[in-house]
Length: 352
Image (cartoon, rainbow, N blue to C red):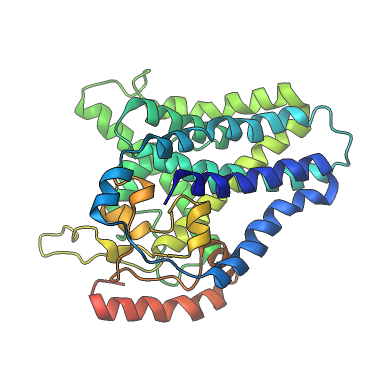
């Protein structure tokens, strides 16, 4: 495994976006057609890769700087697509309907790649990588994710307390709305608790959620100044698409899985059994091993290049792009996924 394998595939989607933007018109559809058309087909053809690193390989790769630099190198691409795209709207001569198409393609980049890398960097325990994560989240107006995901989702995953865990039988559409609203509310709750523990005032510069909540307004003003109404519409729509894409992935990653509640009221420790896994080689290169989600939740500090396959993890039928297409049709989703949930719970136990 080499860092450039991830870098090569990660650049394909931004290159398609910029090429489509240059060509204009319906060429903006090249990005979503690639992501949701070609990639699921190639996932099926190329298949899965369940190999894990040997211990000697792990010791070498876990601290290799190139893998870290690659994730941080996406920051200028994120800003070029989101903010640069808004500015470009000021001098475009294309018809009005091109703006939402361009925003759709941009959201594929800023959501599928930008937020994925923000997620990776946000789990690191040094300030620089945390800052890089925030720079990736700011252009999609989802800075509170870094609070809720790390301190809320990872603590409460696969329990009724977690807004980002999809319940058995819950449709994608209901879940996305519930998770967006619930995650924002819980981020405020977590930040309020932190301030109270430190005896700090709620309404002060110490409260990160104030800045995180005002940030989208500042970006909206900037987008309007850069690109007028088309720029503002482009920016807000790409951010919305990016966030919806994130929540679609959240829906897939934990659908129907629940940890057992112990006699003392607490829940069992998070393990590889509490997240859906997908070992499809191609999409794992595109998404920096995000689909090896079971190991990520069991071991949140492991870097993406070292994440492992576990036989006990529930396995998705296909990669994330194909699963999103399936989830868009709730009856079909339940027909495929509900039996897999029941089979997994019967084998390993846990609530539903």
